[in-house]
Length: 115
Image 1 (tube, rainbow, N blue to C red):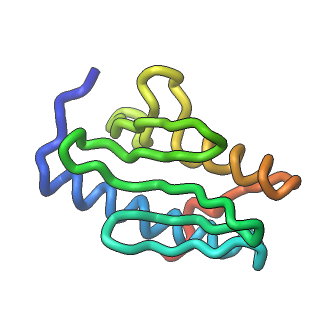
Image 2 (image 1 turned 30 degrees about the vertical axis):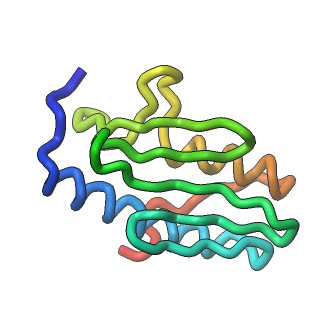
């Protein structure tokens, strides 16, 4: 396990990741409405379902709630990715999976969106 992130480093990494995610998600479909406010990315679907991805400063993690599940992603500097310790799921691929299942199509997020 890697060393805990300093608060400022965490905030920069998490903010950058959430900004990239909102840009990537906004390119998928007109059937979803992503909104990023104060470290919380809400992804609203036409049927009222909402998925949430947010930075959790105290835990130095990015949390995601979707499909009646929750993930807690830690920054893994060697992988340059946010990875859930319990499941080893990676943030972007996990979000692609839940969005794809919800929309009924294969979702590939543009990891370079907004940059």
